[in-house]
Length: 534
Length: 95
Image (tube, rainbow over all chains, first blue to last red; front, side):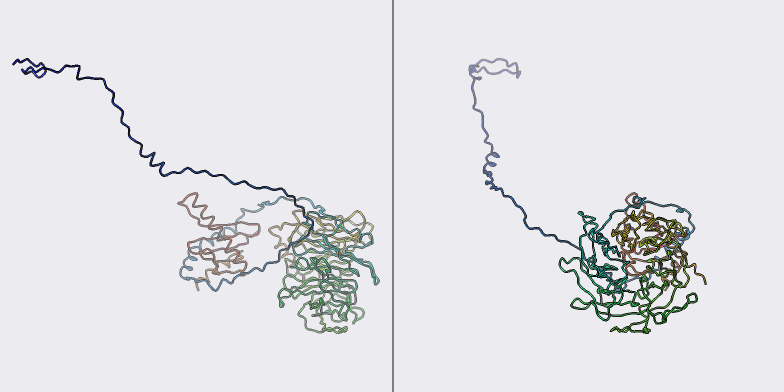
């Protein structure tokens, strides 16, 4: 055997025949290995291929045209405010209430004191709305047919929502028993297609309408007093016959024209109001609604000269038994039993619904008449055409008459507090403003005067600015037509409607200083009212 | 009781027109006004006080409302808030 040295391992090794070297390396190709993808197949095993297609949409073309038209009106009803009585359910822990009050009392008293002495806000005023500086005439409404017959506007009235104004056409200077037809027209000022020459509703009345009054809560009901002494109530929402109640000519009806009609809220019978009418035959009658559309007499008062309470300054009247012609009436806003009337003799009287004394002459009426007068006030130089009680003070009221004077009275004394000689013209209507305690408006016209210092027909007075002359005088029309009536709009407090003898009703929009109450106005009013002389 | 005396003292202060106490839910407990006006004041001022309080605390969570005064043309309304009650005093400032 042979040995050789192995260089690598360092030892002697046996020689062994070696295989040929080339056989250790050979070229070869190995097929690659494949791994099947599992997830793709698993995934495709769970999916399915689907397709969808919307169905065909069928269309057709047609035209539509309405051929019947109907007009309908909508009116919301007055909601009844329900106020729960809270006193019953609350459990009060007096101990904790006491400790709370003790904790806060000092802080509150300190703030009250500081506020009382503070001058921080003197003269500080904030304007929230755009100030409207001028008075403008918004609408001039008229009914040409009535104007062609030379009819005059005898009365205007706003409805309960403040959007409809109604006027009555008649004649105030028709002395004799006229059978002239007259009209009651209404315009809805909020309607888009308002045509000032075409009223929304025209009611033909066989006799002259002297006065109008819309119902205080039902927006479509209006009452009117006629020259014949009747009262009629219309419902303007009815398209056919709009008369719903009338008094008719009975023994109870007035024998002279009805110059003023008022709605009384009837507390006893729920929502049914009663009507009150005033006429120069001396009677003040209260009517209640009956079935079959009739108005029946519920209560009545008669003013007879003897029963008018005498005061020191009044001279004695002529014939003691003469009826006293009543021309106007106004209820107190604070005491529903008290009302003030103005009479043809020139004085005004404070009366009460609750008066018990029976009238001297019953004048053949079915209900016993009572004498309501309690106090007579110092007279004007001519008949009193309008009285108005203040909505802000329980004792104040205004009277105006044909002597061109306006008297501000307190119910506590016979002498007027303030007496204003407005002009030489007759004054037909006076009304307090519903928002500003110191403002009122008066309507004037007619009378013989060659020169008067105020040329206007509608006068606005503001006691804050001046107690002698009007703050503003508005000329209603170009000619010399007297303004017979005016009314403030209680809901839209900027509007004032005035009707004149030319047959037009003008709706005036007042400027902001006539419609925004100042901070000290009530105090000023209280001061005026308390200047009573003994 | 003493509650009535304290309220009378506040009401008798110069210029105070009305005093109302309401609880945390806005229900009036004591008042010198008529029902409907009281309910109106209570509801409105309760909401306003809660809003004022959340305004103060949103700006600074460490802060809280102590008193609320509203000055209007005719008078001043003062609200003293608390966890359980609210005292509302209406004063006519002297001018």
